[in-house]
Every structure is written in C-alpha cells, then in structure tokens.
Image 1 (spheres, one colour):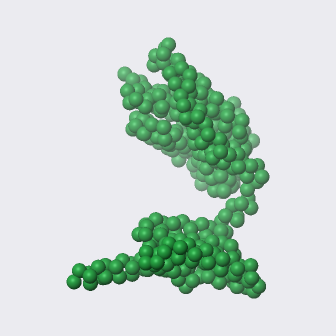
Image 2: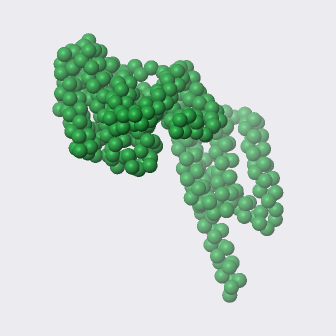
Image 3: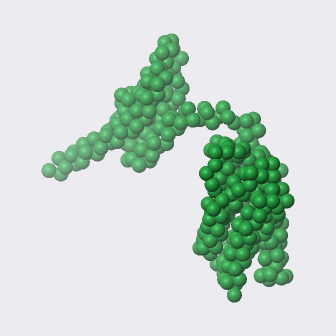
Length: 424
C-alpha cells in the first residue's frame, strides 16, 4: 500500500513538472510562432519550444537514476545541434536567427529548473524572456534614435556604476566619519540614474507631446532647466505665456515627489514627516497648473534642451557639492544649532535640492531629528522656488512672471507656515 502511494506521488509530481514545462514552452513558443509568421522565417515555434522544455525536464529527472553527465552531455549535444543547423541552413525562408537558438537553449534550462521544483523562478524567467523577445521592434526603434553622445553617456554611466563604484573603499574618513567614498559614489550613481530615466522619458515620451507632459517629465531631471527654457520661450511667444507658465509650475510640482523618493532611499522614516507638507505643496502647484490650462489649437515647440544625459564633470561636481553640504550641515549644527541648518538649506537650495535632501535624510537617521530634518528640506525647496521665480521673472514675459509668481508665492507661503507650525 505504501509503495503504491509513493508511486502515485512520484507520477503526480512528474506529471505536474511536465505540465509546467509545457506551459513554459508554450509561453516562449507562442511569441516565436508569431514572430515566425510575421517575418516569414524561422523553424521553431509553438510545438518545438514545449517539446524542448519537456526534454530538459525529463533528462534532468533521469540523472537521479543514471548520472549527472547525462544532462551535461545532452545539453552540450543540443547546443552543437543548434550550432550545426544554424551554419548549415541554406534556405533563407526557413533559416533561424541566433535569438531563436538562444531561446531554445534557455527553454531547455528552464525545463531543468522545473525538475528541481524551481517552479516560480522558471515561470518568472520565461515571462522575462518573452518580454525581451517581443520588444525587438521597440528596441530597434529606440536604438536607431540614440545619438552617439547618449551612447557614450550610457557607457560612462556603466563604467562609473559597475567598474569604479564597487572598488571604492567602504570606510569612513574625516571629522566625525563624514566621508565615505563608496557612499558618495553610490549617491552620484543614484542621482545620475534618476536623471537618465528623466532624460529618456522626455526624449521618447514627452518631446512634441505637449507643454505640460514634457514639463512634467522634464521635472524628473531638473525643474530649474524647465523654468529656464520655458521662460525664454514665453518671452519669444507672449501669446503662449499661460501655457508656458503652467509648464513651469507643473515641472516644479514633480520636484516634491522626486525629493520624497530620494529621501525614502536614504531614510525610510523621514518620508512620514515629508508626506503631508510635500503633498500640500504639490497640490498647490497642480491646482495652479489646472487653472492655467486651456484648450488651444496652437502647438508650440515643447522640446526642453536638457543637455548631456551624463556629464562626468557635472556628476563629479554634484559629488563635491554633496560633500560641501555634508560638512556645512555638520558644522552649522555644531556652531549655530538649528538656525545654522536652515542657513545651509537656504544656501544649498539656490543651486540644488537633491544634495541637501540626501544630506538631511542621513543626518536624521538616528530618529531624534526627523522633524528638524524635514523642516530644513522644506526650507531648501522654498529657496529653490525663489530661484526659479527669479529666473522666470528675468527670462520670461511679464505675464509668465506674474502667473508663476502667484503660484510659487503660494507654495512659499504654505511652506513657511508649515515650518512655523511644526517648529513652534
């Protein structure tokens, strides 16, 4: 009776593995079959991939009865078969590409994974592979639109993130152990990565899609850059001042969620203290933007010139700025107390809000200074709003300066009131 039960469990387990392997093969095979029909070429599709997955699963199960070399030799033979078939194929109509061969090998390996009961991992991997295969057209379109400057920027970012950062010493130096090369490098990489995302979103999604959408995406990189560009254009085209004003305000609205994300990365707890004020300030900007938006048939130029997606000198400059602010916060707190921190925030906000946000998030890691740190970050955003207001008034049309002044003035007022309330 016990032997019969064990046999039933073995059969049920084996059948389950076969079904999962077949499902994985069908997931990948369906995409390859569609690609084969569309391109009118290829040899592996909806039937071949499930068979390969089941083959990998079955051979992996047989290794328990025979030897692990059975699986190794089988996989090697399968790879050699695909390689021979690839180079000997003469009929272009039915020739298979390297991608299909690699997908077949991956399917075989996924079948092996199922045999050791890595069900979820195998299925998740299959989904990722199908996603990559199905994005071929989009990848080609994306790459064809990349400039050499953007390609080199990506290469430089990869060198910094993968080759330089891991080898930086993860040790504390300087007074009160403020300097940690690895930590500083990590901050540069994180901020550069966020800028990368914003840059390509503007290029491939926001560009020519309307002032507001482009401004919102541009705000992921630099709301100050949006203010500079749109203010100049409002002076060139005063009849579009309302639209450009709405764009400047919308870009600034994105600054608060972006800073909240940075703060969360370096100190989870501080987000609780920033959630309410940042929500209020964002809502003020969004409300002002919605009031200014009007349906219009005019289609003004919405491109934002945000420069190189990764300028190494700018990245190093940000690192230097962060270190300077780190020391400024430390010594300001030591010699002038809380007032000194607000002075540092107001000065730092004139140039950049990222560095002071990261610095204060780390400053409040002990948990005792979360309220103070959040107030200082808000003070830095107020300072930055003043800078953008000055840029708009100086570079933009009179109407743009006036409209943005109302919105930013409201933001500054709300920010000051909130600081006074929580610090009282």
